[in-house]
Length: 218
Length: 231
Image (cartoon, rainbow over all chains, first blue to last red):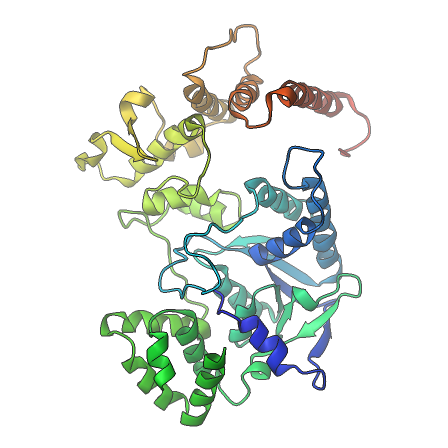
């Protein structure tokens, strides 16, 4: 989904240098990974490095796949349970607020299909179970996290909006080497408001049901 | 971002119920049930929204279970769900699209009830080009979706080969005699690649040779190599 600036909201406003976020070691933990988010995160990481001009391809598949393999292998070896969930088919645009920073009609740079195929074959090779949601992955990821008493690992601030026991571990702050990262629960961000209130807040902010100007008046 | 803070404080101050009552007033009446549905989806994640076909049918169980395990490309489900074929595809070669036409037809055919004459309306529009489906495919013996599940490997390969041949039909054909039918699909795909790839012509031949050599190496290792499994 993506609420505009939500990541900044959480990161810079709520966790000043004085108050530190909780830290967690995922070793021996149960983990549900948002597949698309995980893929984009590592894909972008390898792609911001200089792209070779010697080949005709725009993406260095080898480095990308090695990164995927290294990361996924770590999770497979260190976690008790790990599952990967992918998005299904759904209409992204319906009701969603257009982000003011994106020019109208811009095409998002999606990774090539082969990257997804490689990612999937690595998962199969490592024998990590794959699940594809019927719609957007978020609900299925949270549902599985609840059922498996698991952490959620992804690079999507939307996971701050759900209530579940173990908590959300953003990839941005996670180290593959130490296997530690920051841990967030819904109460950390939205203290004092129960999950109904958060759901209300989220639905209002993320979608265009309510006109923003009308909202400002309130 | 100030708005996010303010809204949060507002909900905190007024309490969830009152805030909800006030906010829902700002939602156009027609969209209120959607608003509520979205709101609930944050809390109750167990509700599964089932994908249905364009005609409201439930998806075939075996396709659905392959899809949920990640073994079936979501484009197939997308075809059944909306009748569209690769809407975000930006390629330049219509041969690539023709490759998929038989599959597209088989899927659509499954979805339509027999009495519906819409399928007899054979024009279908992709990327502003009209295609007359049955005429184009020219096959009366395209298998039905249910039959494919039961077909053996050989017949399935035959279907793939047929798709590739269709895609290549505007190119001159190579004499395929003397080539074992096992390799035909792969070679045909190579040919398709060769004609439609965007790599510069200077590199094309080298890449083609490299692919052929890699494949031969793979075959030989597979058949004769004594070391287990490493590749």
